Length: 302
Image (tube, rainbow, N blue to C red; front, side, top):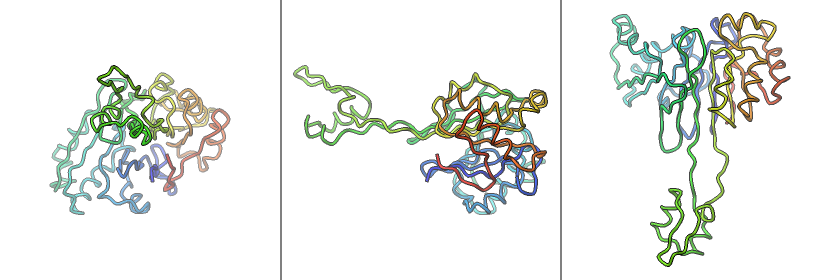
């Protein structure tokens, strides 16, 4: 199942019921850990997610409530006997931190290869690609360098079975259609790719936008996203505080979802001042009806 499991929904200060930022995205049997606050290991166990299945880790920025759990996580990977390589995508600076004597003492000698990829300074850049999906980093607007992440299924072209028989397509021609080409026959006949291929299905996509001031400019990069996670640290009545701390209100999260033409909005990164997040959900829904306030240890389908 393609889904995101939320491990923590709070902002800087965790509470007994809401941990700080971390989540696991599952797409096509690939497991990606997005941010890694303190307590992430505990939440992974509570969510019954195998540590061994984590393919890569994406860190949005170097505020402690988003990456402080990485030291224990890496150490645990080694203690559990991990052998396959791990890719870590993070802002400039984390590599130096992990290579410092203090971190080496805390983490110990890793029993697997750790590949650290520094996030690029560009506004929107592809940072990961495989046969099924791509991941782009999105530069956000926070107090320090911060990125969001956009996971998107790659389009695939399948050839209509009836077209293969009708036009007696060869293997080379079928491959050409899958690569998006028209078929050119020796006699001059041209068969359009659109006539031969199966109509494209809606593609799965997930965007993670956390820790940013309201930043409508980036909505262009994730148009039509299936599921959008956007921070909603404060109610709009606290807009001055949101502006001061470079965060977003629940109403602004709803406004952003409309701009991005998202199908669904998942809000999170709540201030610990809110014992209940119902008002935050209600406020976002006033602008964007298909909104849900994320809950710790809940999973949401893409």
